Image 1 (spheres, rainbow, N blue to C red):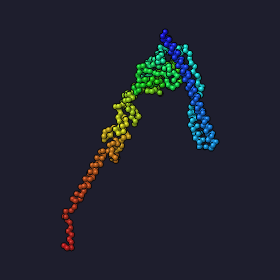
Image 2 (cartoon, rainbow, N blue to C red):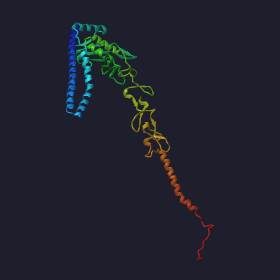
Image 3 (cartoon, rainbow, N blue to C red):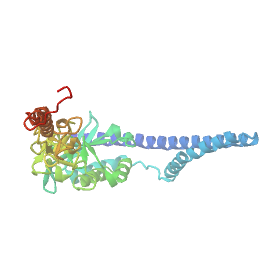
Image 4 (tube, helix red, strand yellow):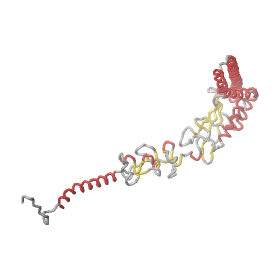
Length: 354
């Protein structure tokens, strides 16, 4: 008996909230009409200003006004389309109390006895365990906030709560490929869900949400089911969490800590396949931080080349060559002195005084 009494109280709360939904809907229509009227006024004002500018031969000002009016045409078209949509839309027909009570009874048949909290003014159903493509996601509670029904134009009036969560390893807020932070990505079901709420078809509302939870759309998940347990390392294939992966900017792939390193010059993260170990310092660097030695044409990190672009070995070789040349030059005068004659066989030239 108490359950039936609470069910009637809940029906009254829902009916009252639906009245607020209808009022809010009319307020939205009114606001759209006012925005459209404002745009019409701006267009009329621009026309008067342009007529005056042309009449007084202010041709430059007329061109400026024409440009401003043209830029406002896009906004005008948007508000006109919205105006036509709301003006032609069917009005919200409120159900009666018995209809809502029947909806709650139907929910009990479809999903089991619903949960309702009269103090917090919420209505909930609990799904069975959901498994998508072999990934067990557990049951979910779909909790509808009665006081938030009238705000469904701007934000979702319900939450999708994982009761035995198996969140994506990359983001614990994603408990389902289409649920993030307890908010459902409704996709093509958005219009149908909003319509069910507005018309008080609450059993249809819960059915639509459950159907989305039981369906996987690989084109628009928050996180793909293929990556649910973590992203696979492109090199070794091991699974890794989002905070454990390293992105290589050179090959555009994700790697685990064991298959990645860091350029010792620019600190860029690179995979081991894109890393180059400098033969001089034996440190890993990225391809952007390497250069070719001018002498031996070997590849080295830029820190291991001097200002002339010469590696350490070639610098030492140059130094040895220079030392040898200097030594040869220093020995040349001695060699020349040894070649000088000791007087044997030389003719003696006498002066006339002799």
